[in-house]
Image 1: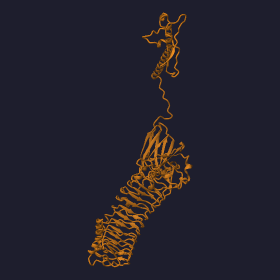
Image 2: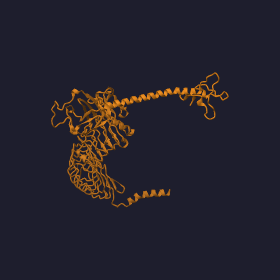
Image 3: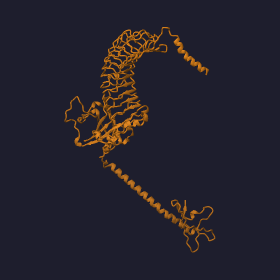
Length: 636
């Protein structure tokens, strides 16, 4: 207990000693409050129009918020060597003149937020070489002069959100070698120059602006970890939206963009992305996020989801996510599934209508007779809590139709196609390969470039052509129920609005291959007369002789059985074996048959049951009576 009291006294004595050591002239300024030996001076809400005199030189933090400083003129702050933080927010400041911060060279934090600044003149922050945090949010800055921040060599965080900026030029942020976080939210930015962003950025906020696409400058930020683009009028994301250099991006916010389409290659290069937010958009479907190996959090609420076969992969992925971490996906269409959560819908109800049919007019019950099939998806691992270490499913719609021979396409088209446009898109298809699978199947695979997720596979044998349509970005499909031993020419064409004009696909997008097995119209081959014919006749003759020999052997075998039985009978009745009446006689046993096992008994005679060494097994017949041996059954 005594030690506890000693510690309490020491803690109470420290501030007393600190106050006692203050210089005699060290006093707190008028209308201000001082704490901890004038290290923290608070002069907020004091209706000050100029800096109060008498601020202690040992001041570390100075709070001047909610005052009435119209202009920060040169020499506004006296020499304060120890000060590191100044709060000037909400003080009605219209202008800051160069030299205003001449006496605070060691400043680390400067807050000029919620004022009326319209620009940042060059040289205002000239001597603030140690400044790390600069807050200029909620002002009226419409333009950034080139080199306005060039002297801030240690600046790490710059907040310019809620201003009136229209663009970000190349030199606007020049001379900031250590800038890590840049906040430009809620401005009116329509353009970001390709060289405007420092390569050292870790976090960038451009939400609430007027960007119609993802700025190209973002693609050259290899250290960017967090990107906020929500609230911009970006309606479509393509493979060009995010570049190859965004290797460090971990969090991407794309909320409230009015997004209507995201191509299957839009996020291909963001392999280390962990969080993706797509809330409150106009999305009806989403391509499988197979390339996002580290994705663990996906926000999808507030969209117009069409729950069909294209979202099978998403349902499977959500099943593996913990319920508390699952973002609900509510179906808007088709009508039979409206209002239901995707994760609760049975898998067989997630169907797709035939290719070219309006999905909004068909319900799952109306599509039961549609010749559709859901192709097995490609491997889509998703990492973290939501990763599929084996395969995360995507769905593809495959419909097949057979064209009559009279509609075979010719090499020339009735419609003249401009030379600069190829309706077959041959330049987008490469490396078409075919391999056999069984006797009546071919596996077709190909490579493609561009944002294509639908393909038409045409395969022709003679004058018959069949068409297989693949949806879902698959690059491999199996053709079933083909004719054996038949050569098929297979062509792969990307789906486009001029597909019907593609009459003669290029050589690079086609390949021919023959199925295994024999053709269905194959006839038996007859050997010519001559030597081979005589050899066949000789073989037939040998076979007949062998059958005859076998028949004779069987007949002989069957006939020997009764003869052998008679031989035993004659021996028993022969006079040579009769003895005198004084010899021991053997009484023959009656017939004995074991009925328990009818398959294991055989016929034997009395002579066969007598011992050969000790007993004379000869049978002597009584007078005037011929004795015949009666066979009996003996169980083996």
